[in-house]
Amino acid sequence: MTNLAKTVLVLGATGNTGFPLVKQLLTRGYSVRVIVRSLDRFSQELLKNPKLKVINENLLDLSHEQLLETVNDCGNIVSCLGHTMSLRGIFGEPRALVLEAVKRVCLAIKDADIKGKKKFLLMNTVGNRNPGDNVTISEKFILFLLRCLIPPHYDNEAAAAYLRDEISSENEFVEWVVIRPDSLINDEISTYEVVSTPPRTIFNGLKTTRSNVAHFMCECIENPSTWNRWKGKMPVVFDK
Image (cartoon, rainbow, N blue to C red; front, side):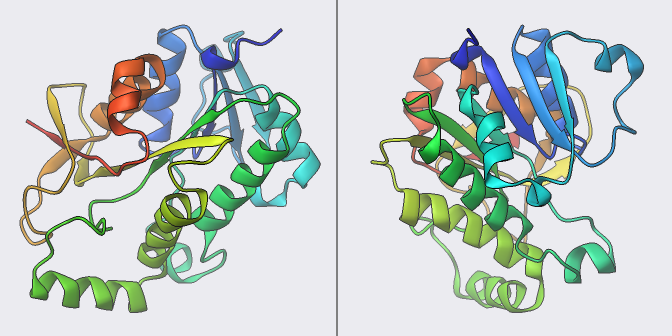
């Protein structure tokens, strides 16, 4: 029987944060499942890892039954999905990639044969302000423009709102955390901080190493104290 707590489904596993997350999870001894359109980023050595299972499909093309089968025996689901930073990626379809993925996965969790709460971790952005955040008038104006003009920003906001408002913190099937990194960079794991609200405005952001975001995700999955501290919340992660 699959150990649900030690099995993780990663969405967006070929991305700049999803890929280091997969490697960190495997290093920690987790069984990892990924749904990817391309295997280009996965080395043969990584693909031979017996704890890695690759589903070579487009997530949104999977039927509910296929997704249900994948989610059924995973105790943890992490979405690192995002839009490609190109004109087609920003303005082309699917404009609601993240929202649709979150909705479909949550529905699959609800219909799963193996009951019990599953952890859902959603990588988001510090540009998505939580209702409890202190937001200046100038920030509100810029965020309004982003929401109206940049589809990926609206998609991120809508996906987080779906977990926060529709799934809520009292759902009997899903417990969630929305992780909000600041200005993302590529570097090795280093010291970082996790706080409830952004310490700066969006005009004066802080660097966040992608490997640190992946590390925090691993900590949420592995350590009950970390999970209990942040479940149902939208923590902000940035480098020290």
